[in-house]
Image 1 (cartoon, one colour):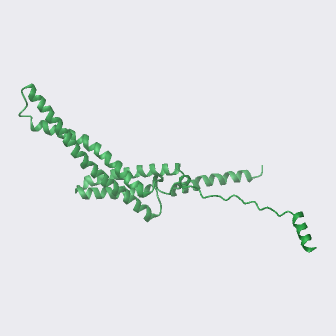
Image 2 (cartoon, helix red, strand yellow; image 1 turned 90 degrees about the vertical axis):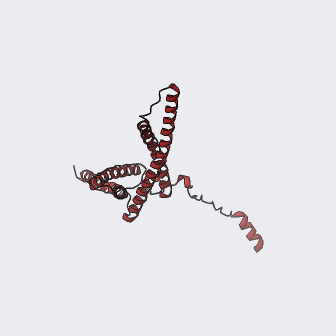
Amino acid sequence: MSAEKEAALNTAVPTPTIIDEPTTAAAPASTRLPPNDRLSIAFNYRLPLTTLLASFAGFGLGLTHGGQLSGLRFRAENAHRLPTSQVGWYLYHKSKNYNIMLGGIKEGFRMGARLSFWTAIFFVFEEAVDRFRGARDFMSSVIAAMGTAGGFSAWNRFPIQTAARTATIGLKFGLAFGLLQDALSVARGRRVGYVDFVRRRFLGAREESQQKVLASPI
């Protein structure tokens, strides 16, 4: 009888079904927020990218400048022996174009190497200052630009006046580039220290005054 009663109770009372709650899967890497880096690009990628862009820009500048200098040099070296026939002028211009192309390519590689080297120095210096200060803002860019300008002046042994002018250019470049990076960072949602301070200082005071006005009796 006990076995029959247990069977009857089991059939009469249904067993509750446990509904599995959906588990939230981890977000894929493609949908995660960008890292807290400058321009939202990690330093391991930002350094070679900027160095490569600087080398291309330097090559273009050197190609133009070197070609112009080579053309002027060729004309100065051959000013006393200008050709007198049509074939001579053809060979003259052919040699001139060859010298312009060769001089431009040489100066392009030289300028590209120089610009990429000093660009790498600047970004390494900027990253080092960021990590030392524990903040990423325009101050690190200014310090890095001033330090790079000082190193460039010492490398080329500039006089005091030229070194001061180079430092001024570095200050302006660092300030402009740093503020531009901060603006892009704020637009992408990264928090910048002095921007948060200004927001708390002014927007917080404005919200507090609005709350006081709303709380005051009419």
